[in-house]
Amino acid sequence: GDMAVPVYCWLRRPHAFEYNTDCLELGTIDSPEWKIPNWEWAHVVRAGTARAGLWRSHGYEADYAFAFCDGHGAPLSGVHQYVIHFEPTPPVDAFWSLTMYDATNFYLVENPLNRYSIGDCTPGVRYTADGSLDLYLQHASPGAEQEANWLPTPAGVFLPIMRMYQPQAAVLDCRYVLPPITCL
Image (cartoon, rainbow, N blue to C red; front, top):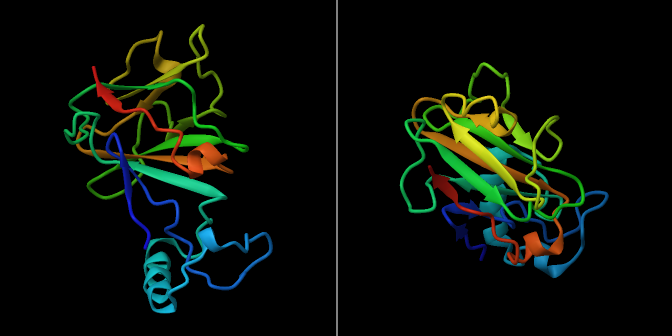
């Protein structure tokens, strides 16, 4: 069956939406690694998929990672300041983004920047001289120097979700490891 893969408290389920035993739609990859051969289990997964998000993208179209804690296993909370250091950024053929949710009610987080996600398509994001990227997750602004790379958090517990669209093979086979969320 499909096993959840924790990575520095990132939880990924690349095959969460692979319930088909037949090729269902235009562009669906008709290959064994993207199917659940046990029809009874496929029904269970299909029911869960319908509950979580009907007709979600297949894993090879979009891979999602959820973070519930920092790199030391502590719950994520807006009372702390965090950084994610990407070296390299997620290898994708389309784009990637990190979206911030309030973990209490799963709403997007209102903030003074009106920024609900940040990623490789966010205007003004600043990379370091070596090409790496630091993203700041915190409730208050990290200051003018770092605000371009700031994804505001709620004051309480939060849940960031990394979305990687058209992930490359290194994402799909877990050779690419998402970096930990580090408390500053």
